[in-house]
Image (cartoon, rainbow, N blue to C red; front, side, top):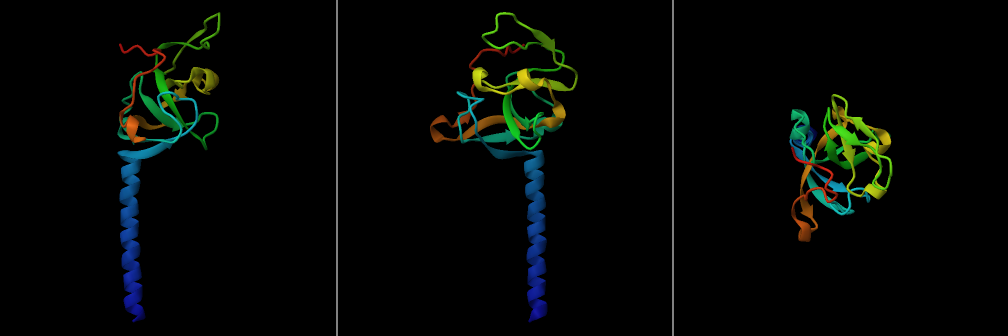
Length: 165
């Protein structure tokens, strides 16, 4: 009786470990579902929107200007940020705020991207902490699944900062 119970428990534990490994590999290397909160990406992404994240693009380093990504925050690695890619390595970027009279520029270094929120007046982004290394990027957001009235692909940059070359 006890031997049978131990056998069933070990069998269940084995299946749980297998399914845990499958789930981990799926979320780490293919994609995952994320919930975004905060005002920095409004009006594109609102509080508690549920989105699909493509993790495969991180492994292939296939990001384009205009993509919305999630990454570990350079200023606080315990937080995850959601921002739009404004510049890729080698690009010249305007680092001034929208209301600044004198415009300042910088170049994005190799192995980095320049990230900004769509809500320029309420976003802590590369204008604050500088270029973000590719290694901090976790994936690319491309599809909204909740709320249902906005179901579908994410929209382009509402500020028209990104020029698709």
